Amino acid sequence: MKQSSTSSTTPVYTLSVAADLSGIAVHSIRQYIDKGLIIPFKKVSCRNLFSEVDIIRLKYIHKLLEKDGLNIAGIKSLLALIPCWKIRQCSETDREKCQAYICETNPCWEASEKGTLCRNTNCRECEVYRSVENYTDLKSFIKTIIK
Ligand code: SF4
Image 1: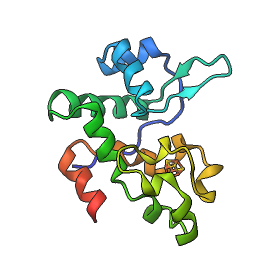
Image 2 (image 1 turned 120 degrees about the vertical axis):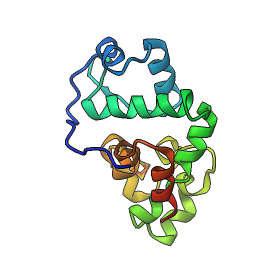
Image 3 (image 1 turned 60 degrees about the vertical axis):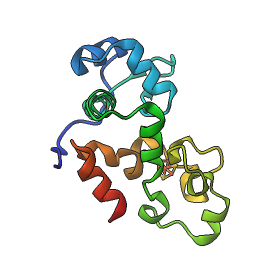
Image 4 (image 1 turned 120 degrees about the horizontal axis):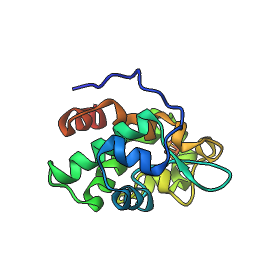
Protein backbone atom coordinates (compact mmCIF):
# COMPACT_ATOMS: atom_id res chain seq x y z
CA MET A 1 0.00 0.00 0.00
CA LYS A 2 1.41 3.39 -0.99
CA GLN A 3 1.35 6.34 1.35
CA SER A 4 0.55 9.90 0.47
CA SER A 5 3.59 11.74 -0.85
CA THR A 6 2.32 15.18 0.16
CA SER A 7 4.12 15.32 3.51
CA SER A 8 6.65 18.07 3.99
CA THR A 9 10.40 17.40 3.87
CA THR A 10 11.23 20.63 5.70
CA PRO A 11 13.08 19.82 8.94
CA VAL A 12 11.25 21.70 11.70
CA TYR A 13 10.73 19.33 14.63
CA THR A 14 13.20 18.85 17.45
CA LEU A 15 13.92 15.37 18.77
CA SER A 16 11.43 15.68 21.61
CA VAL A 17 8.68 16.96 19.30
CA ALA A 18 9.43 14.14 16.83
CA ALA A 19 9.09 11.70 19.72
CA ASP A 20 5.70 13.17 20.65
CA LEU A 21 4.43 13.19 17.06
CA SER A 22 5.61 9.67 16.26
CA GLY A 23 4.79 8.15 19.64
CA ILE A 24 8.32 6.72 19.76
CA ALA A 25 10.59 7.22 22.76
CA VAL A 26 13.51 9.64 22.41
CA HIS A 27 16.04 6.92 23.25
CA SER A 28 14.60 4.68 20.50
CA ILE A 29 14.86 7.48 17.93
CA ARG A 30 18.47 8.05 19.01
CA GLN A 31 19.11 4.35 18.49
CA TYR A 32 17.59 4.46 14.98
CA ILE A 33 19.90 7.38 14.18
CA ASP A 34 22.97 5.61 15.62
CA LYS A 35 22.18 2.48 13.59
CA GLY A 36 21.76 4.44 10.35
CA LEU A 37 18.06 3.75 9.88
CA ILE A 38 17.26 7.45 9.72
CA ILE A 39 19.37 10.47 8.85
CA PRO A 40 18.03 13.56 10.60
CA PHE A 41 18.79 17.07 9.37
CA LYS A 42 21.70 18.47 11.38
CA LYS A 43 21.71 22.10 12.38
CA VAL A 44 25.02 23.98 12.63
CA SER A 45 24.69 23.49 16.40
CA CYS A 46 24.63 19.70 15.66
CA ARG A 47 21.10 19.40 17.00
CA ASN A 48 18.86 17.08 15.01
CA LEU A 49 15.73 18.27 13.27
CA PHE A 50 12.99 16.16 11.70
CA SER A 51 10.42 16.74 8.97
CA GLU A 52 6.94 15.28 8.50
CA VAL A 53 8.47 12.75 6.12
CA ASP A 54 10.97 11.78 8.85
CA ILE A 55 8.06 11.18 11.23
CA ILE A 56 6.54 8.79 8.67
CA ARG A 57 9.90 7.03 8.36
CA LEU A 58 10.22 6.73 12.15
CA LYS A 59 6.77 5.18 12.37
CA TYR A 60 7.59 2.74 9.58
CA ILE A 61 10.82 1.63 11.27
CA HIS A 62 8.99 1.28 14.57
CA LYS A 63 6.30 -0.85 12.94
CA LEU A 64 8.91 -3.16 11.37
CA LEU A 65 10.43 -3.64 14.82
CA GLU A 66 7.31 -3.88 16.93
CA LYS A 67 4.71 -5.49 14.66
CA ASP A 68 6.59 -7.23 11.86
CA GLY A 69 9.10 -8.91 14.16
CA LEU A 70 12.29 -7.63 12.54
CA ASN A 71 15.31 -6.52 14.51
CA ILE A 72 17.60 -3.64 13.62
CA ALA A 73 20.09 -5.89 11.80
CA GLY A 74 17.19 -7.34 9.79
CA ILE A 75 15.95 -3.90 8.79
CA LYS A 76 19.46 -2.89 7.75
CA SER A 77 19.79 -6.02 5.63
CA LEU A 78 16.42 -5.25 4.06
CA LEU A 79 17.48 -1.69 3.25
CA ALA A 80 20.78 -3.02 1.88
CA LEU A 81 18.76 -4.89 -0.75
CA ILE A 82 17.52 -1.67 -2.37
CA PRO A 83 19.32 -1.68 -5.75
CA CYS A 84 20.65 1.87 -5.50
CA TRP A 85 23.02 1.30 -8.44
CA LYS A 86 20.04 0.50 -10.62
CA ILE A 87 17.93 3.41 -9.39
CA ARG A 88 20.80 5.87 -9.82
CA GLN A 89 22.15 4.12 -12.93
CA CYS A 90 25.74 3.92 -11.70
CA SER A 91 28.33 2.83 -14.24
CA GLU A 92 29.99 -0.60 -14.05
CA THR A 93 33.26 1.12 -13.13
CA ASP A 94 31.65 2.98 -10.25
CA ARG A 95 29.95 -0.18 -8.98
CA GLU A 96 33.23 -2.08 -8.75
CA LYS A 97 34.62 0.45 -6.28
CA CYS A 98 31.44 1.23 -4.37
CA GLN A 99 30.91 -0.29 -0.92
CA ALA A 100 27.17 0.33 -1.29
CA TYR A 101 27.18 -2.13 -4.20
CA ILE A 102 29.38 -4.68 -2.46
CA CYS A 103 28.09 -4.65 1.14
CA GLU A 104 25.18 -6.96 1.98
CA THR A 105 24.49 -5.89 5.54
CA ASN A 106 24.30 -2.09 5.53
CA PRO A 107 22.19 0.36 3.52
CA CYS A 108 24.06 2.30 0.85
CA TRP A 109 24.02 5.56 2.79
CA GLU A 110 26.26 3.94 5.40
CA ALA A 111 28.90 2.94 2.84
CA SER A 112 32.42 4.14 3.58
CA GLU A 113 33.38 4.32 -0.12
CA LYS A 114 30.78 5.53 -2.60
CA GLY A 115 30.69 5.90 -6.36
CA THR A 116 31.27 9.30 -7.96
CA LEU A 117 27.54 9.95 -8.38
CA CYS A 118 26.89 9.56 -4.66
CA ARG A 119 29.89 11.34 -3.25
CA ASN A 120 28.37 14.77 -3.66
CA THR A 121 24.77 13.80 -2.99
CA ASN A 122 23.02 14.44 0.29
CA CYS A 123 21.65 10.97 1.11
CA ARG A 124 18.78 12.54 3.04
CA GLU A 125 17.53 13.99 -0.23
CA CYS A 126 18.17 10.86 -2.32
CA GLU A 127 15.34 8.80 -3.82
CA VAL A 128 17.06 5.60 -2.64
CA TYR A 129 17.14 6.66 1.00
CA ARG A 130 13.62 8.04 0.71
CA SER A 131 12.13 4.96 -0.96
CA VAL A 132 10.74 3.50 2.29
CA GLU A 133 8.69 6.62 2.97
CA ASN A 134 6.17 5.67 0.33
CA TYR A 135 5.16 2.35 1.87
CA THR A 136 3.14 1.35 4.89
CA ASP A 137 3.69 -2.39 4.67
CA LEU A 138 6.68 -4.63 4.22
CA LYS A 139 5.33 -6.58 1.26
CA SER A 140 4.74 -3.49 -0.88
CA PHE A 141 8.23 -2.29 -0.04
CA ILE A 142 9.79 -5.65 -0.98
CA LYS A 143 7.93 -5.56 -4.27
CA THR A 144 9.72 -2.30 -5.08
CA ILE A 145 13.06 -3.92 -4.27
CA ILE A 146 12.60 -6.89 -6.58
CA LYS A 147 10.77 -5.20 -9.44
S1 SF4 B 1 23.32 9.19 -2.55
FE1 SF4 B 1 23.34 8.08 -0.60
S2 SF4 B 1 21.28 7.18 -0.40
FE2 SF4 B 1 21.56 7.75 -2.55
S3 SF4 B 1 22.31 5.89 -3.58
FE3 SF4 B 1 24.10 7.12 -2.97
S4 SF4 B 1 24.72 6.35 -0.97
FE4 SF4 B 1 22.59 5.64 -1.36
